[in-house]
Amino acid sequence: MKTIKNRIPAIGLSVFGLLFCLLSAFKMTDAVCVTQGCSVYEGLSVGGISLYWFGGAAFLMLTCCATGWQGRYLTATAAFFLILDMVFLVIQILLWPCMQCLIVAVFFGAVMRAAMVQGKPPWTRWVLAAWFLLFFVNGVSAAKEAISPWPVYGTDAAPVHLYFSPTCPACREMIAALLTKSDIEAQIALYPIAKNSEDTQRIILLEEELKHGKPLKESLSLCEQAKVPAMTYDMAYFRTMLNTFKNMSALSRIGVTHIPFLTTRAPFWSDVAASAPPKEDCPMFSGTASGLCEDTPSSGLKELFKSK
Image (cartoon, rainbow, N blue to C red; front, side, top):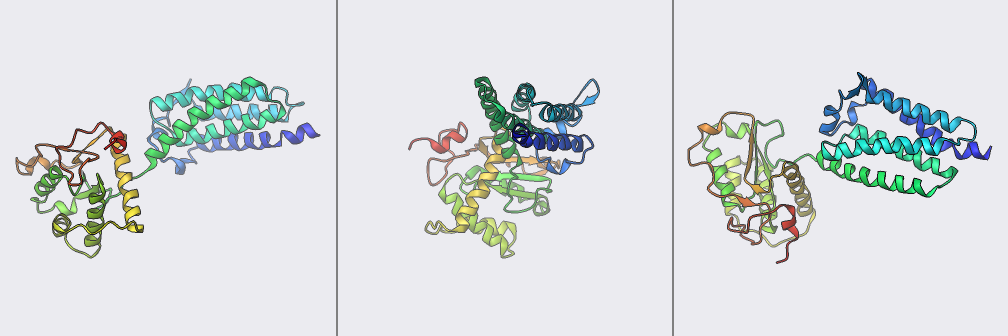
């Protein structure tokens, strides 16, 4: 009776893993799909059979092992499926993370941990540790992808997205060129990047002007010309820091380290003045308060931690 009692967690986890795989096979768990990997791997199959059916079969086997006589094969079976899951975790690291797949992986890891209550051979700890490392890397990637960028103006549905910094001269050039189009305010979404503390303060000012209902062009002009107030570490400051970090995360996902960065689903750029493209871009992080583009070219997010 004591042995059966010890195996109850493994039985319950195996049943829940089985149910989740079955629901996923019938596309009833799409609500948890917040990463591109979910759609990429949706049609992945072996011999025409969805991987979710194989996952369901694995959890069914684990359930049988957990409820069988003394559960003597539970740990070995759980380790076998965990190793197979590690292969798929490596594939996700090299390609795209999948939130649904990570949930399935959680059940495999949890069953393995529950199975170790029956006994802890040394090799099982190494298997579980290796799996956890791969899972952690995937989890960070999935969390990063799930972070949505924050527009200070416009919405994600806008056909034109511009990532900019208030203290970046090249960004101001591009914004000025974009504003020559009469209908641009209805088409654009602005995603600010804080290269330094001055940027953060000016972004707060821009957001306040826009909230007061002022036109985009006027708000940008006031943001550029206004005298930056003394630094105050209030809720607005930390909220803006968090929001601009989301925008940097979005750029880092596609390997962009300099701004301005423009994406568009509308063929309008050719209509803008020929002088619109800036002569020089700005690093993501600036070593000077003025944010001049003459800073040393950025090599990525490590610029944030460079020694002064």
